[in-house]
Image 1 (tube, protein in one colour):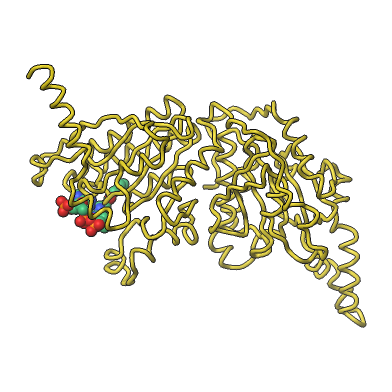
Image 2 (tube, helix red, strand yellow; image 1 turned 180 degrees about the vertical axis):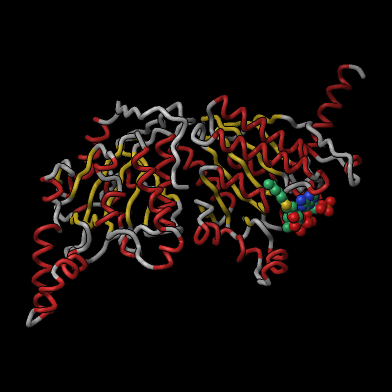
Length: 514
Ligand code: HXC
């Protein structure tokens, strides 16, 4: 072939591979409301920024008629590109090619781009749309998954890892997303489960649809495997771009600062707090009253809503925000809220993002469901995560801070750098009602009017402990601040903690209560 023919041949090959699984399969993909893998990459990344790797990789399977099959790009598109000008590595499984099934070379393309991301210190984004292990390749496809899981683990805490579920993600395939930091799902498109409805029916006799078993809503509300829910793929890509804007490229850096902006006028802290201290308020409003432009990017909004977590900026710098949500279950810590908070704290700590915690907590949730489900083990994760974190830690106690909840929510005892309390804070072993019933039981029982005596004793306990002053007298609170000084206090604390160093004893690694 002469030079021109070679060039023509190259473009013709490239064109053929770029067509993926062919027209029929693409039409089927579209009919199910999904974009193709290439369209997804183009929609997520900056225009024209995608740089593809390994377009001509081919599978190496010779069994079950595979030798005669051309699988375009082996069913996965890999490469790098930019989001808002910042580099990211990306892969997108192509369901139009053998159902996006994962064979050995398909996996090798993914692990290559993962290795690249770690070496370059940039985020890795994986778009999953696959029938799982390529059945014809047997153990080689399992090997491929193992290689991916291993790399997910080594990349953890080094570069942000983002998984997007845009189709089936079944069997062991779900464990790569589960090992990553953030999982995005789309209504009616994402399906994540270990065993599908047919197996469920055979093994446990339960009839359940794919949507009910592992659809997007189940993943964000019930299972907590996913962190972000969108109604369309485009909305999902917007969410990913927004998330990336808050993060550093790797643990070697701090997130880039944006231009500082004051909170919106509509979020005035004084007007957000009900006059009656018994009426709960939405802690997210307090967060919005404190952060730049009142823009709170909530993570896991629908899972364990008794706790809130998410990102915001203060004077332009990314902070990780954690709060108890008194509107749901009075803001208690339970199993799910503990898992949610602990993992988020560890993420922020790994990526140099300061933690700001808003406390309004009556304690851990009582009950046999919780005890038998392991609230001790799960609750301990919060203690571990906050204690272990060495990023700046700033805590604001708004109202209740009772019992284990007080300690767990980034108290001084877990080495918060600054603890502020509003004058409305109540810091005690437990709520005044419960406390009075226990320590004054005899006096209440033997009183002529037990109800009156109970009221008196509750008041006595409240006057003594349900305030911030006892804790402040012991130095457990650095400053009691009026609510309207919250933002200014946090800004000051962030400035002072900017150069924080907090060396820890040398060890291979700790053993968190996973
Ligand atoms: C090889 C596969 C495949 C697979 C799908 N295809 N899954 N090829 N291995 N795992 C192929 C189909 O044969 C078909 O090829 C094309 O992809 C499209 O699949 P359809 O079935 O036509 O699509 P759809 O009706 O949308 O159904 C999608 C599906 C279904 C629900 C995902 O394909 C399915 O159930 N696949 C098998 C899922 C599974 O059991 N996977 C293995 C899990 S075990 P043609 O040529 O007809 O177009 C596993 C273990 C991993 O993953 C453990 C890791 C630790």
